[in-house]
Amino acid sequence: MIELARKFNLQTVAEWVETPEDAELLTQWNVDYLQGNLFGEASVIPPWDAAPASAGTAVSIVTQEAPAPDLLQVEAAPEPVLAELEPAPHPAEAAEIDVDVSIDYDLSRLRAAIAALDSGFNGKKNDEAAEPSYADLVAPMRQAS
Image (cartoon, rainbow, N blue to C red; front, side):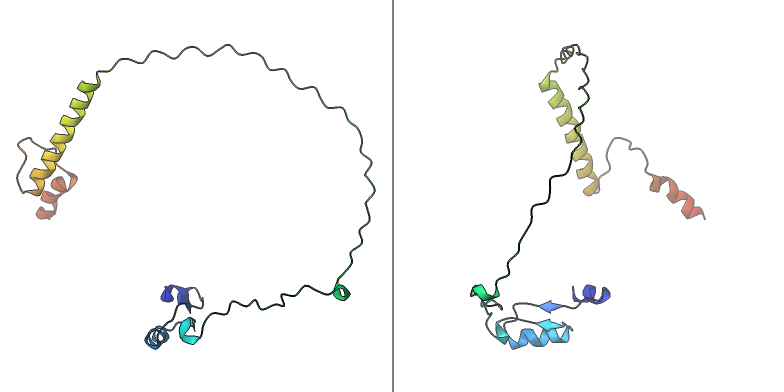
């Protein structure tokens, strides 16, 4: 973070500096400002006077009501009448799907994919002929050149 701040010409502040060791380390890291209990307890007193201002220093603001502007009364245009739409047709009945068959099919594909990955990680070749990858196709050309 300190290096990033330097790149953007920002100054850095380290908070919660508790020990002299922390302060020394942060100084070595070129932190611009340090603050924390090592330098004193935090002050919770506001830097302004909390007493309300006396009546002698109050400022009186007198406002005058502005005259109401003359508004030209213009009749509003009539709202356009929208043509009534025919009700939407009923949605087509969804084709009934045998959920058990669909799930079994998906799970069998998932099991086959997991088995292929397992055999690849274990160093075993899959019995099924796999489609060659781009790297497999390019490797013989690289060896020849």
